[in-house]
Length: 446
Image (tube, rainbow, N blue to C red):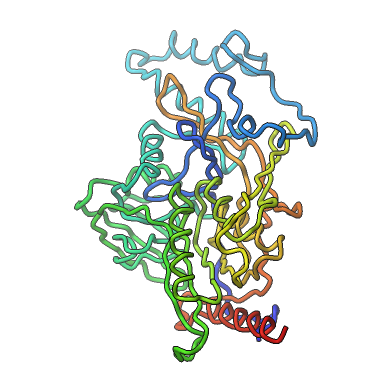
């Protein structure tokens, strides 16, 4: 049987991430958040109207939940409300009177003003993206890219950079980088106060070149310097291995562990292939491991859920104007009946939370692990036509099929199993195997 829900082990320090939930402007999928070194994250919308595309491409699914009182729409400087006129006055005064005005870079002034406006919103998920960062984020969904292969984020106080997870079989993993590592310095430069984009721009680089990361590991007092040789980062996101119920007897029912590291364009296709492989070996249960999965494309997340759900709601969004948008699963999934368990942890974010919550609310799978970190903000990335950069802006919230709020709350597992970083045995995986054994025993008795 499973350990009781009250079972306690040494608690893993939970990191509240700023991994983003986004939609892509030049692509059209919505993104359910991730920064990869990297980066996986971008935004989207209708270029002419400024309306996020995902409110336009599903007629009949949007409905008004509540009315909003937005700022007036502004199309030109002349439309600025009185409260914003000092921005233009300040620029005019600087241009006329600043002692070294000949050295002023108008673009840097504009970017400083942009950052100031966004910081005034006091929203950790809203930020300015430099032109360099903008292009690098687009690259991450356009095939393999060069970097170290680690998903990163800010620490809860926003002052440091933390590793959400190394990507399997990448320079970061091979160098021993672990989830929860705090990056104190990059090539000797202190990361205090860096944004994720700042870190991305410093850590990424040409394949074959080194980067030194000064690391503070959870539970250890001494810092270490890890030298990583950058390389080409594969975009494969689904990994599979088969196992038996734990005693090694080949006659026991085989189970398949499917690990999803992020949700990319290719994830649903990769998952379907892995499910077919599991069927070929007559797997009698699936353990879906989304621990340390920071998210990715929302449409891919929904498609992944659809492999296990026979239509019905996966998630819904309510935007800043009170409009609700449903995201249903398409019927005809390839693994609708096979017993299923999902593993989550404090680094499971955004897309992985949407997936786990849908499978939990729909009574499709038992969720085992620790509470997820609770990132349920809908963000878009708007490109700035005169700047080549962009801005992230929070425009809504995601909800579970039963109406639960993901933002701040996360997903509470059906069975909570803490896993120490130095654990020699994967207690969460053992619990998942026991759960599948239990489910199969019920089927056999029935």
